[in-house]
Length: 352
Ligand code: TXA
Ligand code: MG
Image (cartoon, rainbow, N blue to C red; front, side, top):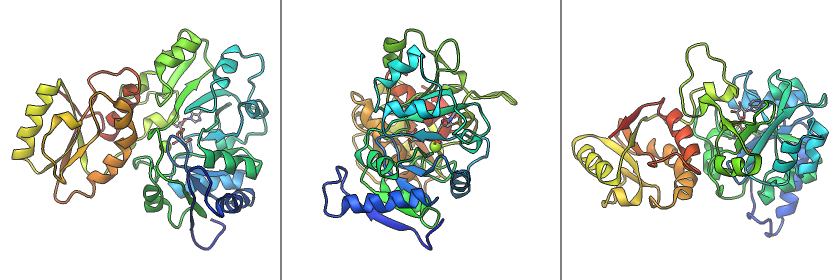
């Protein structure tokens, strides 16, 4: 930190409030001076620093308690800026994906020398993304710098999708926290590597696998997306090997038809001191032990509420386990829901 204490700056999501631009300009100055700024994006809140300043980048790892071998995403204001930091020229697939930005999408390309190895954790490739969120874009623009930013949670905790999540984890660790409201997508960007012959999906997110296939043709899905890595297996995305997204409460995942889930949950609810994360249709009762994730017809709502629900489970008094219902299939945004929830539960899944 470069300030004595964390400044929390509240702004409106479209920056139309009085003094909003001045607040972002202040935060941009902090970035230029080597400080840390937590800011909203459309996916989750990020913890940002000047990507070209090794010392500032190193302080991100300290603030989060992040493993040194887990590389960071570099955020830029415009897709054409990607060429300044990575070798994208003449890469047809990169062109196609860059034409879709801003989007909840991160692409991995061979890095140029300006990007310090601290950002990429020693790798020759760098992850880049252009966020959609107005506040994030303004912050990057006004700083005039690329901003490296992981999610603004303590390592291992659920990613922050609301300002209070960031304050809970980063107060006293970041110089500035910009409170710009809730994140729309609710889970982190899709990460795709263009460093293989066939593009490889390393982390599913708001930009779906189906959409990537439509744009690029064949796309491979990394084993680590839905499977637990074997002892000693090296992940293509270092982040995938760490325990992630987990609340203090033990999470057990449930998968089954609506009818199966309904009878299983009502039995558990009666006989155990448990919390429940489920679709609206799965449980008629309203209680402080039940967190409803929206309708089975709308997985986007589940995605948006998921990390908040994981944090909320730790506030339910007296429970020692939470049963969380998964979508029935892994298509669309559900692939990302499976990827995160499998990690939050340490791959503890009951198929009914
Ligand atoms: O939506 C997002 O992507 C958010 C917001 C703040 O933009 N950021 C985010 O960053 O989720 P983080 O650090 O929590 O996750 C980045 C993931 C990690 O799994 C990391 O291992 C992977 O991307 N990654 C970053 N650079 C990489 C590289 N050069 N090669 C392979 N994987 C990389
Ligand atoms: Mg993260």
